[in-house]
Image (cartoon, rainbow, N blue to C red; front, side, top):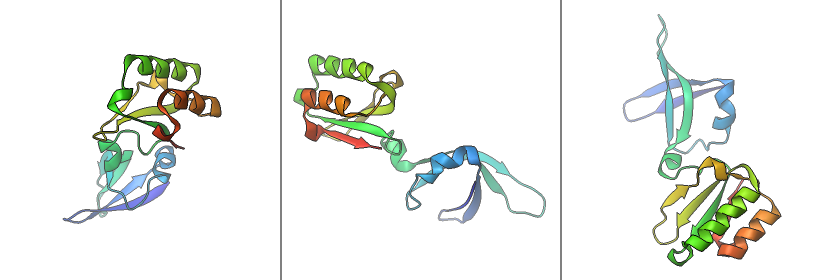
Amino acid sequence: MAFLTLEDTVGTMEVIVFPNLYDKFARINEERVLIVKGRVSIKEETNAVILADDLTTLENILNPGCDEPHVLLRLEESQRTPEIRNGLLNTFLKYMGSTKIIVENAEDGQRKSFPSKYNVTICDGLIREIANLIGENNIIVNK
């Protein structure tokens, strides 16, 4: 469980993070901008608090999945072909698991996550097969 103090240009407010959400929160760097979803609790003779239902970072909203374990694949335009896509999809299905796959366009940095049915288990075989398709330098593993 955690107690946070959120601050903006107007003031501060306490946020209560219950144990079921704490594991997700514990990985977030305290210097990042947080987005909190929750309910406001107001009781007599105490300040209002937010009971957090979900926490994420602004960075994760702008670049989905960046806070979670994932495999980032940087692809040049010349690599975004049907042949490479099909090869990647077959590889993902071969190494099914729980780690998200995100593709980033090398030219403009735009990112898109593959649907969760293509989540993978990170292992040497997976990395080797992806490297054969797009090159080792285009794979970034965030555990």
